[in-house]
Image (cartoon, rainbow, N blue to C red; front, side, top):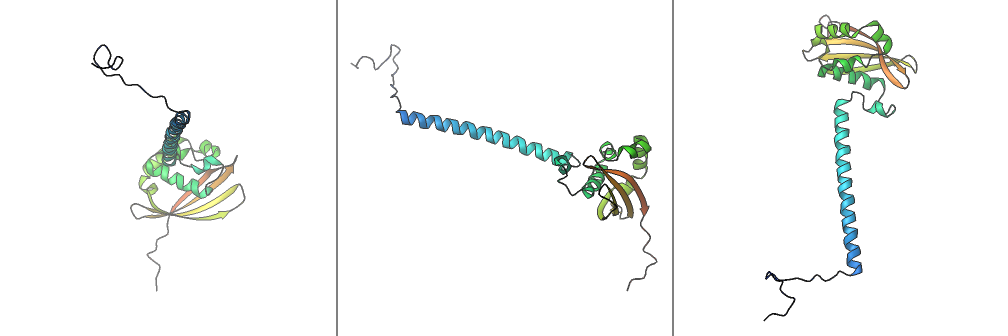
Length: 183
């Protein structure tokens, strides 16, 4: 017959666990602690990546959120055209200065954009900057629309409280190139 204590009353075998040494117990705790830290780091890293990717896609002037890390007024004009191309007219209108918004209500701006939609759908944008002062900048842009038409736009930008705003915008069709003789 079997020795007493090796079987329990229900006929199952009993296993005895040998206690781990002090060093093995410390190593096991250290491994668990390291795994817990790695899980937290992975979770936080994933959350930071997702948030950054979302902000890069959705926020018009992402670099401007960090105190002018962007290129300045040029990045505002690019963000303006990107917002208009996406159809986010409220966001585009929000890039105008309060003085401009006082002169041109959103309804008038919206009607202008909708009535000239093809003109604002840009495929290529070229900029030339002429600085009038540190707080005021003129940007001259040449646009090519998705229809192949060319336009010239002059942006007047002002810097208020460390941020650039569009203060004025003037448009014109590019002069026709038909009468120019090329050699």
